[in-house]
Length: 378
Ligand SMILES: Nc1ncnc2c1ncn2[C@@H]1O[C@H](COP(=O)(O)OP(=O)(O)OP(=O)(O)O)[C@@H](O)[C@H]1O
Ligand SMILES: [Mg+2]
Image (cartoon, rainbow, N blue to C red; front, side, top):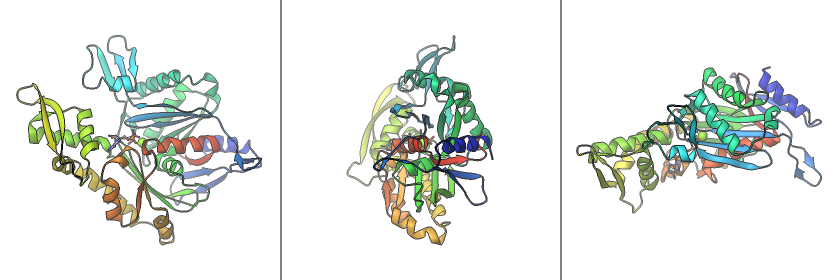
């Protein structure tokens, strides 16, 4: 048994007589740790554990502190001085400088496709976030629940553990699959264990998972998400209108026009004329935007269908009953839920506050010990 799971189990064990149960998922190395939630008095639940939960996303980072709530919800970005290496800003303030960096300042987005591309920058960014949120040093001996896309490599997992251990050397890091946290965050009771089908569409990855009986039955991940769509929109606007637009402008066009078959047929954007190199305003057609994001949407829908075709017959009824749940910021893309529902022929819902769904689930896993842990993590 690996150290992380043993630590997590001993944490549950400290709360005897509520014995944790470990469920094995098929022939893979994916495990779910389930600890009973004790009742205090008249049906009220008691917090079991303390520490932090971190949703370290490609686009957004959220930090939850047990007993306090979500203390950070900001873009995954850090700005540093090229000369001194000192942190100029993090999160929202750093992201706002993207593409218009002041002289001597470099803006780093340290994650790519759901995984850490720049470990040092990630550690410094997280340190700055925790400092700002006044997460105290005594958390060092507690638990850090960190959400990761499914199907990340061992090296990628170890870099996440390294990043957290650099912050809190003596804390136990518990890695949780993003869709498991998303399921918990969308109200699915991991312990009750009926079937759930979750699709978490983030900025860099789309994770699809089927859960049942307290464990992952099937899971897959594709390294596509909202950012892939933004890049495609920017390329299409350049090709069609000869206009160079920034990341934020492309994102706004995507969020405004999406795939929706609405009355909105165009939206205004401002960029730089590719030939004259001067600012220009353009009205971009909805058809152009939906055509640009279509390949990413088709890949997501295709991956959902593939996963559905692999569902064990015994689970089919439960999945149909509990509906397909879309989480992550990509779930908000106008028209996407309809596309998934039409392709899957199963009712599809966007979970409440999809951008915070994973951290809500991670918070539950942190505080009540109900959630996922990987045997091979760390
Ligand atoms: N209303 C919206 N319509 C379409 N896309 C949206 C909307 N709101 C946010 N997004 C997209 O959601 C993405 C961010 O979602 P989220 O915060 O879940 O990703 P992440 O967790 O940082 O990424 P990942 O999980 O892939 O590492 C961005 O690409 C953003 O453009
Ligand atoms: Mg995410």
